[in-house]
Image (cartoon, rainbow, N blue to C red; front, top):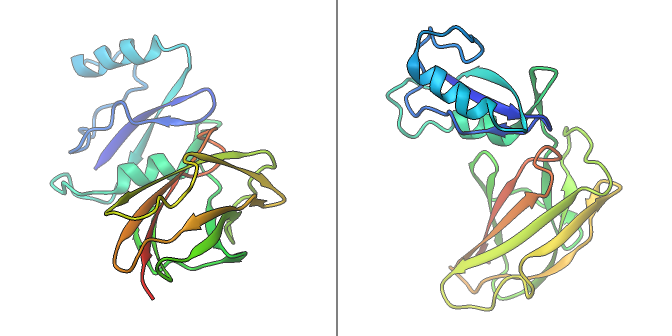
Length: 206
């Protein structure tokens, strides 16, 4: 199915015109003369945004009937637009106690689960992933934690700021949940085009 997005001058992609079932093949948001009234209405609304740069399509492999298709989300989270074309954003890995750790499970694109010794305190940082384009020095990532269950907050001060320098960020202490409980860490670059967002689930599990 075909999805349409609009993108900003920074290259960041907006989900505003994402359609859950995809758009008809004949729809073209770049067509100023489109006979589709919905397209004309949305074009008028979106192009009035001072940050508007252009429209771009993406053909997802999902069938239009697939309610849980992750393709639109992945397209938004993993890409920016450069010169009218998709370009992959840099991405980062989680670093625990100074070492890049492979996730226990990849829940979906941009969301990974890690099993760590329950009730312990570990250092937590981010590092440019192998195979990723470089992440520029000075790139700032806001990290927030939340949890389900009753245990010490994973980050003593949430949100915290991590800043890239030489491919890695500064480190902060992270309190791993007690056995069987999970906590959530959201890692959101201040500049959406600087790197992909990352969601991390930490489970206390020996």
